[in-house]
Length: 103
Image: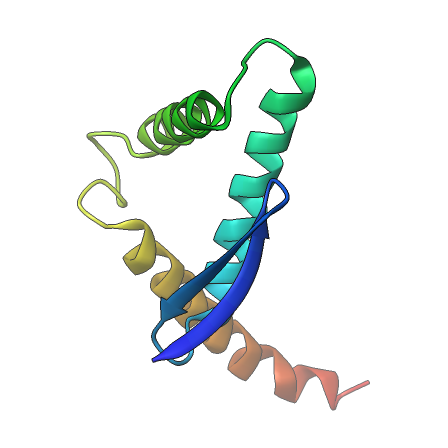
């Protein structure tokens, strides 16, 4: 397990994640920090606990709007979607690399 020191809305936290998942965690922290700072700076929500709850609700709504009941991603988690995208990038890179040598 890897320990990361992160900052969310000016407060420091020590988080733990699996090796190789540091970047994903950092991206999640950055996204959450942005959402919470935007809410705080709007002046409409007061108190860190309320800001955290509103940010979580906004992010849950975003997630649910992307995850539709029909379609190719309906039964996949976000992690599975990211893994599938990574696999597609690998296939594309392998297919396009020989083409780069032609020029």
